[in-house]
Image (tube, rainbow, N blue to C red; front, side, top):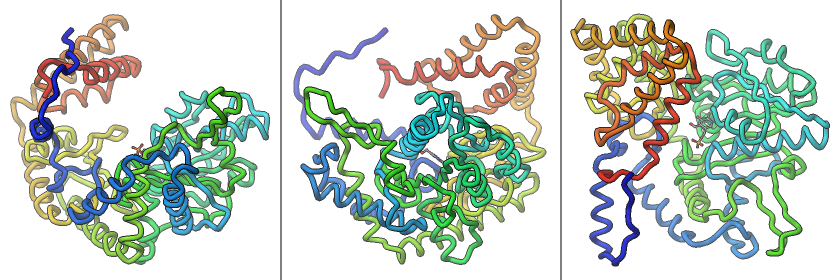
Length: 485
Ligand SMILES: Cc1ncc(COP(=O)(O)O)c(C=O)c1O
């Protein structure tokens, strides 16, 4: 196992920065609009503002708001502006978090403690549509809450009746997404939140994706169903600043209808020799930069700026969706309300399609249940929409052509699937661990063509093996390698 000695001598700044730039050359190039996800970008001018504001509060620590009242004011103002945008009144409060995941962790922890303290529920349950973000499952694992997944309807939105039927005496909260990540559709939040209210339980809208976009989409006269605090049953909302607010990562908000509710989120230690220690979220020390950058951008763009940006994004998303639906064999799943959606096909292998697109320099995430390719369209994609549709049509033609390689990979998947069904479980586990090592190992990284692997993973009979395989991969990726750049 290689180790990396701690650097002995100092090195010149320029040399260090140059080596970092060289490493970055091998990453996905998001600036040119060829990545559909991960990075939200408006322009270099906006990035300069974000960096300047971020740097201004680079050293401050949000752990102690009395030490840096300016930072505390910025945070409270960002929260108040978001509450106003999301139909909240003066009673709505919130916390600035490190991202959608922390916002959801906090919403689940809050619900658990409300259930424990107010309703004496010992084994709490939260009902989520099957499309809800896995951060809810992470929260369930971390905080010992049972997350009950309810399959979605054929239009990929939450099934209201099935979710109501899933309520038990132990249910503390229901959840809906606005929109869901995998397919970009908005769950019937009003119906779900009404049911939650009738049952006297909490309701969380996960608007991590839509929180800073849907209000503007609606103002531009696109039809958007209710999803925010204007619905009386909605008790908390998560909204990510580092997604469609285009702020600096990491930045998200979790908002609560009342401060009474938010008290259940807070941690306070009163007995520590180091003093009284209060902490609102997961972190102890809290970076000031992202708060300052978000405050600066919300004020810089204002509603006017966000409406202009949203208009461009919606036009681009509609153009892409229409273009995709006119390509024979492809379709956009369901009828997404904003700019997040998935491409699927009844006839073509979409994982092969993803490989063909990768060869043409486009990065789209692969999804399963059903197999599809994910697109998060943002401002940078306006300039590449035509080129993408052209390459997509070409990629479809390439996938359509029968080829020896494709035949071989299909055969490999079919054979592997057959073997995983007929071999004893232990053998399959061994086989999977070998496969994962060869997948993760070496300096070549992942193979160029992923379709056979996705085909295999998608139909594995034993999901436990898949988890082991992914753990192996994570283990290997998160490790120092001698030849890592
Ligand atoms: C609907 C939804 N909720 C939560 C999250 C988690 O956000 P983050 O990656 O910022 O932790 C995401 C991320 O894509 C999301 O799409």
